[in-house]
Length: 352
Ligand code: MRU
Image: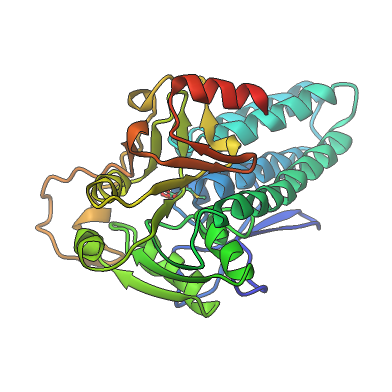
């Protein structure tokens, strides 16, 4: 990824600002949205200015820091009330990616530890905690990338769905992090990127990230994935995830399940790049993962263009669940976890 482009940037100042790269405008326009309150960040998450499971978690953490700064003059009780409201607004922004709730829980623990301090010190502690989450995420993706790169042959062809890249994280990416690390190791990696209807994260974001870096990427329609698996050599499918349940079921961008079934049909390993912050042991299986339903207009057309009859009924689930038995391995920062199931997930998670 172009080193000058980053999905988010904290700017200390009066007032402090979270600058989000506006991912809705990519690839043709590079512009930012500036947030000053938790509600601005929640809106940006809902509107997909910032998206991707780890990135929305980190943005939400900064949202808490923004809110803390905004109410520095409030009495202690009022300040806590504002913080509780900010937490609730951010939690309501998108339901599926567990990283959002994981990051907000981390910020709550920071607040709980600082009870003796005044609002200014608490606000500073929240900024530092969010910055730490951001830095840790890059390091985690690099470790995950190194584990995953070992799975790829010297000359690899990978198919991916949606965008689990630098834009979806604090940097390097998860699925694209595996590809980046393999390339850095001197492997040859060619990528097929599904365009990923309806919001085109594959066409707009994955293709952009890889193409601007000079990676050999070929964009395909989602409908072409089966044909490509039938007629070309694909060594691996690698995708990201928004939440992995305690039995290893994987929620990810709508269409992922379809790709996993096709990979199974064609004997292609299906890998899920998964920082352990994306694992939710409190959810027993995929059926219990909340699946976001998004606006009908995202399917009726794109942007200001509509190609479907006005008012036609639409079903627009933003994610689907791939059952654990279709998953060859979870690629985590702690290693590659082969053939996830409930018993293995318990063992792996207990060992970290
Ligand atoms: O709706 P999005 O764009 O937030 O969906 C993103 C995905 O489904 C990603 O694959 C997932 O969040 C993993 S990002 C490392």
